[in-house]
Length: 179
Image (cartoon, rainbow, N blue to C red; front, side, top):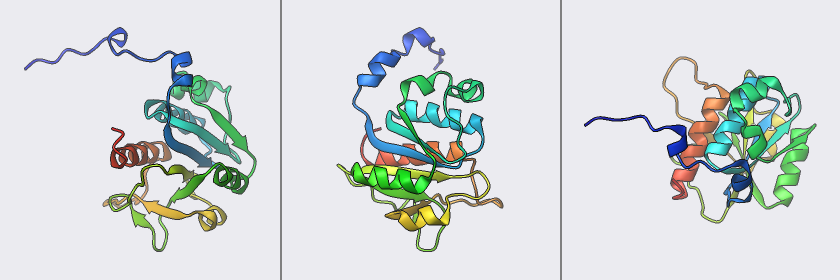
């Protein structure tokens, strides 16, 4: 069997305007003090790919417009809705008021393995991802409804935040029967 790479024109991609009105997945991605603008751009791209409702940028996170965000987002910062909060705790309170269940992706006592996490249809999830060095702030973990941990088997026991987001979004949507 031979495989021919598809051209971009053959992929049937939505325009930004089509994406904006499209039904989104019940997920908001919260970045708690992510410092790398390239990571932030990658998050926008993943959220576009998985049709997340929005990205919530908090604390030291840079916001669009930014050349570094754009370099890795490839324009997804224009399609995906986003908000900014100075304090992640305020973002969590706002999302909870919008009906989201808040889940921190962090290695904690009593965390649930992503493999064992039971996603519930009809629930809106706010997934909180932390700083590249320090992870999710303890104060934010304390406000979470639950914590998910990605099983890892190497020496580092951590993934780049943008990689982590791709893994968690894919698995959550798979469990919800969306992919």
